[in-house]
Length: 269
Image 1: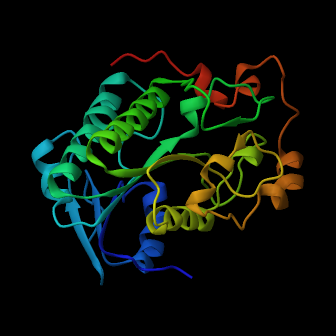
Image 2 (image 1 turned 180 degrees about the horizontal axis):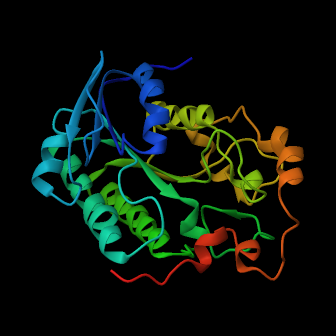
């Protein structure tokens, strides 16, 4: 059962893949769902508001955040690429978001971080949220910055944040790596709901994954969030093995948890 504890909830990055997956689901979490992205993505339906906003524009971000009770922040660049766009959306943009939250008195944020914050740990390791960040990319580096920024805003201003290091959230795993990193859309919603409704979250980091038999991540440090995944990549294992080749163990994308991100680039701005 989804408990509705917020009147107006803001979802940034609403035009992206995960934003689209959550748009219908998150309506159960609030009275009004405010949806935002930088480009036009259609009209609002019942119970929705739409605000177009460039995260790099502090005035626009301030207006976007006004009147909301909590924020689910998916907005920004979601892949590896040139540093310029990542700087604007993921670094300047997350600063603008937290400044707006501070000024408007918003006290709960769910920040879409990424498994690429720790992508240079090996697939032979199991890690928890206490290990040092080892970003595998400029994108992962920007998410590590967001985690640090959100910790600062909690320590200084009391804005609670759950940093969700999302694994691979798709309808089903696409390859063998995703058997370890897969997060179903329904489990993603369960996780976001837990982040929004847990009485006290402080500043927490949780790995976003379903109940997969193979995993590199230990979520025991985040039991206070109350997330219990109900789906698993295991039902797809035979099909994934049948359509993919055996891994090349000399390939860095196979050696490290970040997969192909560890060898992407360099890029010219």
